[in-house]
Image 1 (tube, rainbow, N blue to C red):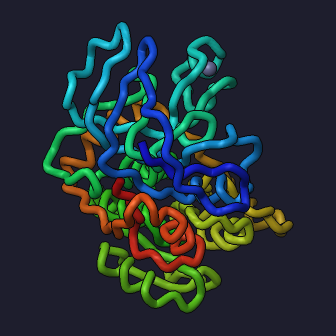
Image 2 (image 1 turned 30 degrees about the vertical axis):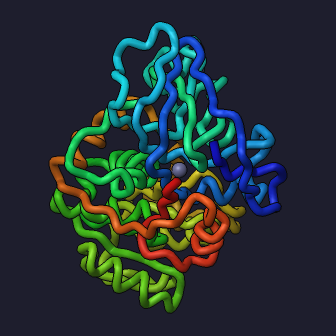
Length: 328
Ligand SMILES: [Zn+2]
Ligand SMILES: [Zn+2]
């Protein structure tokens, strides 16, 4: 099979011909039809995240069909369409796994980080962490739901049911999905972009934001919650200043630059600052059900698998509208 492989962080991915993987016990072999490009891939490729397995095939928004079953896998059929997400395995026995917080597992394995992922023609995965994908979505359209959509969903859940005015900092793949979900729930979205990024602001309005502005602007109304998808620590004080007393600021990305110091008074008033880390299988189940009800439509730009470095460069430069998807 063909795969785009990271041999060393900071170096472009290499197109390699590799042996087809063989599923072991409990694993499925998947012929990949689409794999989304997530900002976390960029952090792994750029060396922002520590100790990836090397060499590694990145990619954790994988859609494909089952083309081989390892021993003991009986809940998938050959030819079935399935998704493979970021959470690739957990230990099943740490206090987090046992309490329903498997996203915080002490010994996890993540797809495209410790486990070879989807920038390839084929992959294998632990069947217990894959899920069936039904519905009328094309393979490319659904790929961004598997991480960008899911992390947006989990972030919005953290905002609480009573939060109506939601600020979103950074308007890319996760934000455009989340805005559709928030509107469905009768919430109002205030979208903040890089200063002067008119294209992203137009996109946010098109998706249903009621207000758009630069990330250093103060919104016209106090927000109930703010969700930050841009990996920029200085947005945290900006978001704290924009939320009301008792409001919550949620960091939805996996990696952020350092947070500058800020006066205590912007946290005062029982404002809450928290991160969202990874996802549980239950999140995926709940979100995919909801996504088909909401009829979420994703905006995607397709790239050939061989052009993965171009897709990553476009994401790094903020030149994508919506999400990039690799097609092998
Ligand atoms: Zn665990
Ligand atoms: Zn991701």
